[in-house]
Image 1 (cartoon, protein in one colour):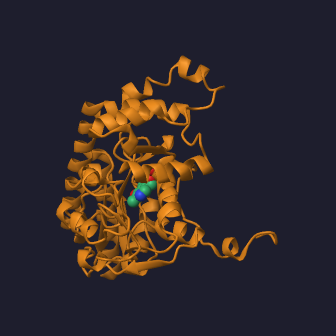
Image 2 (cartoon, rainbow, N blue to C red):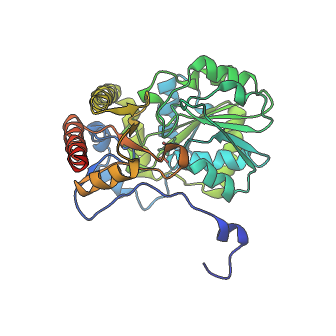
Image 3 (spheres, rainbow, N blue to C red):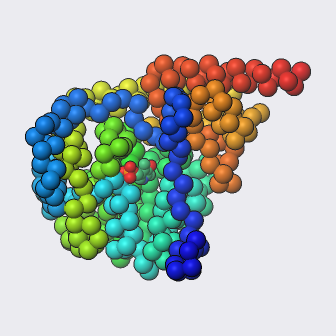
Length: 357
Ligand SMILES: *Cc1c(COP(=O)(O)O)cnc(C)c1O
């Protein structure tokens, strides 16, 4: 730390991203990326002519991409704001709506707490039930902004659309932010609610279901007035927030419906394959509607399993947070990656059984 900064910055604990190691090739199941390549027709957009325009600033309105997103959901372009990854959308929304207070589950995406601290937003963590589900009544009439990832990060558990709607109805005087990073792998999408309620902000990303984590594109869908608020924040912070190559990729990726459907289906099939395999190996697997599963083994601690898998060239995610410290979070990989993971876990558990004999 330098002696020039503030106590706030000195005291901050930044978000720790999952490892992106470059030392060797791992089977990489730790950061919920999509194992399938980006849509080929999207990749084809990075043509010579796109590259030749890089001397010009990107379109600050992201006109083409905004229109593709609006068309996809049957919304107006005034309901859409494109951001540099959904982490930026979260930052804008926290800046605009959380200064007086924000609440979210005790087990969820770690970035919420980090941004709340950075912006000095008073925060409340609401304890998930023993089975890691949200009790929606705990979120009624909060008098502060409610943030929910749905499906929830780390657990993969989804809240039904009717329960989300109840939470929105019971918070008419504050904002409810629904982070839908994993919604395409589940079955409840809150976008339909934005025409009905003026207090819901939906945040989405191209990083997971659209195989574009490296392009850094996210977006907000909300009532026109809310989008105006967020645009003000964006234009006061970073007017050219999305680069022109990423915009072109994302605009085509959202139009390539057949590729999207196929890759989402493959991930869902992989999720069933992985969950079944883990159950057979004696794991407890939380019911996931996302592109990962959170699982714990009764005889082997999460951290030990994480380390042993890493030695075998397989990366999964382990969190130190008390409630989930015995679990590992495994991103859904390709069919062969899942088969390899299950084989290696089986060997690790067999070794441990031998040691115990
Ligand atoms: C991955 C993730 C994000 C961040 O996505 P980017 O668009 O890559 O910034 C946001 N929220 C949740 C819950 C996530 O899991």
